[in-house]
Length: 463
Image (tube, rainbow, N blue to C red; front, side, top):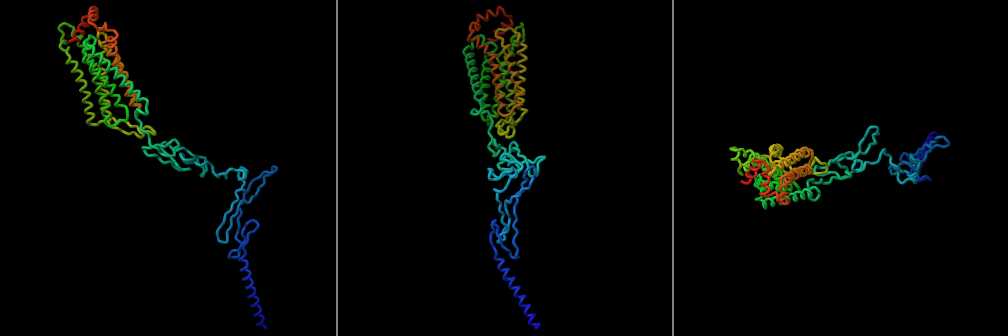
């Protein structure tokens, strides 16, 4: 009886176990979707996986009361394949401005500021949250071609940013170009015009070389001075266009030598005026110096020193072409490096010394008799010459690139034109407009009114 009861209890327990096993096998197969679109199923542990709802909370004011409004805008759940799924219903979201996406053109951005566009970079500042920043343009010479760039990239030396600072473009070459600069054609025009005027004056002096006004004060020096002035006008073309090594070496040396010859000719003219007036005294020892060789020797000696300075300059440290990429933003300045600044200023200094001596001597001789005496004209010409070059030095040192070259060209043209106008314009005027003043009869009339010294000047100049 007891054994029978024990067997019956074991059978019942076994039946319960079989029932649970069979029931669990049916439960594991449960898998359906409810009316909210959520999948319902049991996992291997017999558990229903959790489903998380995404809730949009919004403070709403109703009748002066603030209520918390709740709106389900999405869900997160785990599928039978053990993969998490995320769903969000954008049209159900109420944004900070109280509008639904249905009434917005796009989803609002959760940002403190707009994106930093290309050409700018992010720059955190005081008072900003760690996720916030301000946008600043790239620094000079830098570009950025990305949105929200942390840093800008520096352009190579031969390139420069475009206007938007998004990419690097090649720099422009800067020099006195005939195509791009109006100054180059203007300087060329004035240089050619003054060269023609000088040539015309030389032609007049050659055609009337035997007249008293041309023969006065050594006509050979006048011819040499006119040729020097014509070459000085033409040497302006060495300063125009893109400089190369050969033009860099020629421009300063040619300018220095030509101007030294011109100023030396003026100095020789002034010296001859002094010699002529001192030789009027009876038994004066100055008479032996009244020769053409004296004036030629003065020109040769004064010019040789300038030539020697230029030869040493070209031998030791000659000028050369230089590309300056840093002085002017966005430009490559093509210029001439003087090689040795000492020699460059030695050339200018020596030329200034000759001009100063000529000016002083001409100034002292200005009160001598006026008939065919060039001392006053030389004084005015040297005054113009010195004024131009003294004003040129600070302007030359304070400019760079093509403006510096333009200053020097202007000084060359202005000083040469001053000498041409002050010395030769009055003589050409008498030769062409007042020929009666360029005759022996007029000279004889002058002799009766002028001191003996003046008469000797005219006679001495005819020798």
